[in-house]
Length: 471
Image 1 (cartoon, rainbow, N blue to C red):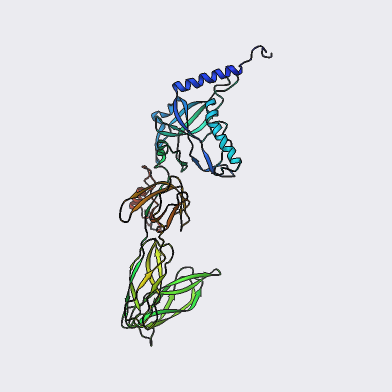
Image 2: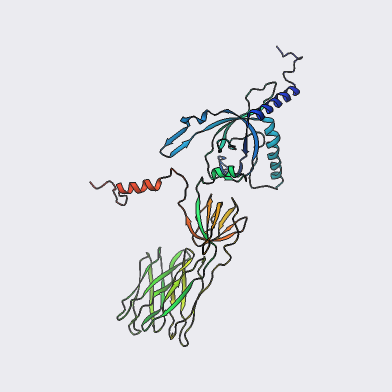
């Protein structure tokens, strides 16, 4: 039997009345919460998994706390992975308030995306209703909750329309999303969560310096490579025969690769020794490295540069030029620098020179001086100039000292920073020198991996082929 045509089963005015009454009740008995829509930065095209997202908008909306049974004592679970909190709340919000106050704003951003004005995140299908994955900041508990389910059909169509959304929320588990709402109490909830690494920075570079010392008679002044060999898979060892009446010389090989074949490029002297003679020069032996065919001879000189007293400085990201003063009569020494962690770690001789009667000058150049500038901005990309690593800035602190030292905490790294490299803020253009990089700063009070490993090493010797003993 058809419905009575003289009854409307709900007119528009009746629907407006119920919606107004619900809005009024929520304002009277509800609480104010922050609604944080998720902006998708990157997702997997195959399984549609969200790989990175951010929350940088917030909306205050009134909500009724419908159910808080999830805060019962049994919701906290202690497992071998630590303490897990399963707190849950159910919130009711006004459909009309959400559509007028939040959806309209998100729809405006979605239109800008279509016009090409905004393109760094995705708002598709997020403007119709609250979405699973969006966050709710609950001020009474000072916690963030993630929306796990949205009930949009309850109560069921009184007078032909639904008037509320019921949000089933679970305590948010942080996964390195960007949260930058500009509200300290919201952003502070995740300040120390996630995989956070710490960079120790210095605000200025220092130039390396060196003082030369002269040698006497019978020095190995140069090692001439007569055959560069081939087939090397690792750096070979260079041995110099024993000096008959002085100090033994030492040297290292520098390898190169051409056309897929690895060979020796040059041999640098680390200690020219003394007491060798030109009539009976030392023998150069090249072994190891799985290569063959390399051979070299030594040139003996007198009164060359024998060693350096080195202050390595800071701020070197490529090999600096080293210029050694020349003798009044003879050959000028030629030196190559090695760097480690942004400092000059060693000076090695291509040629020690000869004929020096006075100590020559040594000048080391190539330092970067445009560092120690600016202040990093919260959540901006941090870029390592040598490693190419990109991370997001968590916080930045400057400690007054001589020289000034700063600490920068970053997260969402795509690699590892190098000690000694310059890092630049992608927005602020701040530039600082990385003194050290802490890769073990995961901030979790229940993280005891190192302690467990150290205790296990006392029980089982994992260096043995059979750690449980031989039978």
